[in-house]
Length: 140
Image 1 (spheres, rainbow, N blue to C red):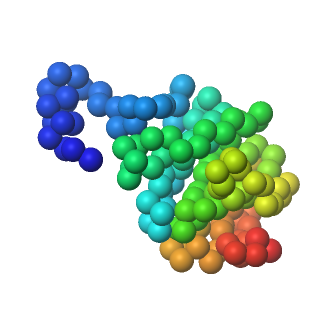
Image 2: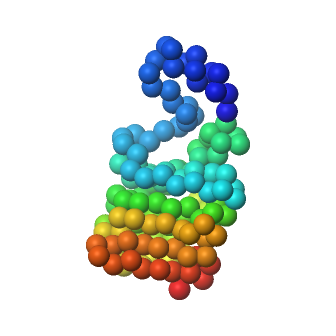
């Protein structure tokens, strides 16, 4: 990433797009990063999950539109699995070149927060006053 370019752009305009090749259409609701693969997952008010790759010039590697609005997102530290919280469920899916392959769809109420621990061995999902802990590898 060329920071000098951002600094020169800052002088022209106060808003500098970091992802010039694609964007969300509406506010970004949540964002998560993966250390292992170096990608970033984001969800927006446009109902899209987007996976960004900084090693390829911040291109959007995957854009997947959901029918229902997503509330939260967490990407596994390895970067091949993503958890998405919705108003009525939690979905865990694997990222592939064909898109998302849903591995788990767990019914819950307003899954407003999802987070993997540092090693990715656990996934926590917060819903109202309940926290559900799943194994990050077996999803049980």
